[in-house]
Every structure is written in structure tokens, then in C-alpha cells.
Amino acid sequence: MDARVAGTKGEFPQHPRVAPLTVKSVLKNHPPAPQCLRADDTVRAALKIMAEHDIGAVPVMDGVRLIGIFSERDYARCSTWAAQPGMTTPLREVMTACTLFANLTDSVQECLRLMLENRARYLPIQEEGNLIALLSIDDLLGGMVAYLERVFKENELDRQIVSLRGTYSC
Image 1 (cartoon, rainbow, N blue to C red):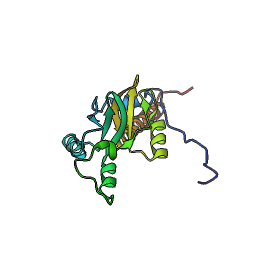
Image 2 (image 1 turned 90 degrees about the vertical axis):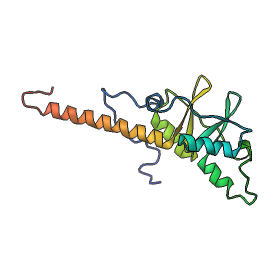
Image 3 (image 1 turned 90 degrees about the horizontal axis):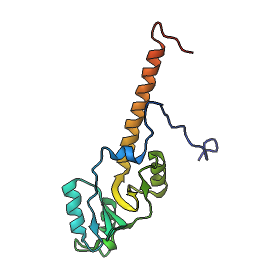
Image 4 (image 1 turned 60 degrees about the vertical axis):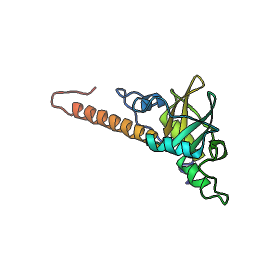
């Protein structure tokens, strides 16, 4: 990395009339509860749910505790193994263990940083230790784009108001 930018954080545009971008604001346009499976469920069951709900991953639970995520990436990896596990393979054998979590009050910027550093495509969202959503990197990037569009729109409105004839800026 270039020494001029190493260790620096980019300025994230903000506007007083636009609420800060948090996980909670992204979840407003997201299905409330993710489709979950148990560790004993099969790859076939996971693929069926993923196809039915047009999702790329499913959380894998042990009772009420999240223990992993089974994604399209996991399926692609397991299908290239020499032993090639079949459709009846339990998810516990092919899922990715879950080590990253976010809360409703976390910033989207921090969540994206965490996901990029850990090469994660999905991030479980918890509230009081309970899984409430599974966000993809696309969900977070979409939320960020919508937020930036609102900020730029408000800045443009401010610029137009200041340049109106008969208005004064102090």
C-alpha cells in the first residue's frame, strides 16, 4: 500500500438532514428473519432453501446458537474436493464456521471493513445474542450507495438554496 494513504481513513460524507448509516437502516429494506438450518441438515436441503428464497447463504444453527454459514461458495469448494461429498452430506462438514457478527447500531462502513479484511461475503446480525438477519456484502454496498445518493442530493439542494436570488449566507 502506498505510504501516503497507509493507516488513514477516508472521509465519509455526511449531512445533518440524513440519518447516519447503520445496520439498522439497511435492515429496513431486508426480510426480517433469515431461513435457518440445523447442522444435521443436508447440503440438498440447504440448496433447496437457497433456490426457493433466491438467497446465496443460509445460517446453520445449533439450537438457538449460530455455529456457521453455508453459502454458494462453500458448495463450490466442497464440490471440488477429491472425495466430493454428496447431497446427503451434513452441513456441519461443509459450512464455514461463524466468527464475525454485527449489531444493529454498528456502522455499515465498519461492517464492510470487517468483511473485506476477513474475506467474508455474509455477516450475521445479532440483537441480544439472537440472530435477526444475515446481510450480504451486496446488501451493505446497496445501502451505502443509497445513503450517498441521499447525502449528495441534500448537498445539491443546499447549494441551490444558497445560490437563489435574494438569499444570503452568513
